[in-house]
Image (cartoon, rainbow, N blue to C red; front, side, top):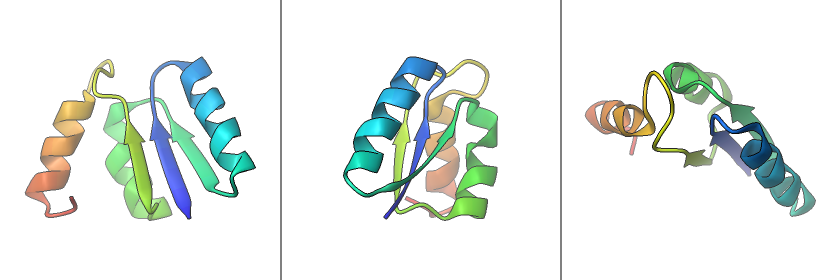
Length: 72
């Protein structure tokens, strides 16, 4: 399974990456909310772990866009 982790805090991204990779997941990370839609289209992950309080484009805005596009 492919997992995309989106969080602006590096330590959180890396900790989650390590844990999930140890469990056999293929993990990708992003720190900028405005790039999430592009990453989702490119990587087609099975799971999205999304920080709601990102600077710039917030996780809430990303979720609203995903919902509007019927991707949730």
